[in-house]
Image 1 (cartoon, rainbow, N blue to C red):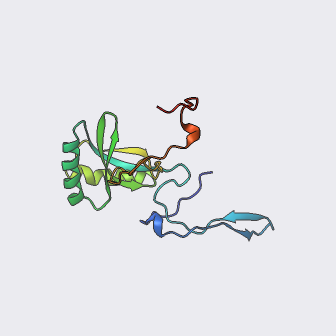
Image 2 (cartoon, one colour):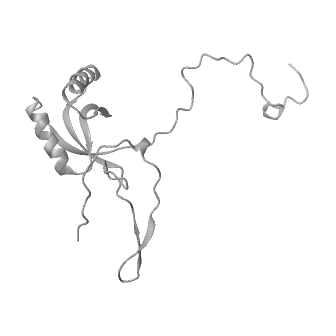
Image 3 (cartoon, rainbow, N blue to C red):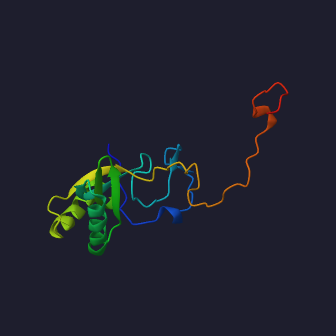
Length: 157
């Protein structure tokens, strides 16, 4: 049996409070965990979403130019994803393929004749950078503990 999906609504993940399931009693006195009606934007378990891919190019400048044009045309978020060696221009973030295919028709009518639906991973966290590259702070001196200095046998050079 396939579970029914609630109607799709737009939302921003940052605005949603943390929700815990609350047990409820059913007619046969068993307890099930039921989540309140949560908005659906992507598969929260697998971090997957459907997007409409508009074009693929090896040139970054071409991808950025197409992104600016797409922002003017579409009412959905526009993304430039890089998967070696291609830049991929994609629009939308849909929970199900059917909704993405409906939006694909809008993309085709807007002039993107080769638009197609792709499944992508979303909201995958990236590790923070190891170094702050914007920092211009240079230490005055570097202190090395004596235990890390080479043993010279008490002879100073």
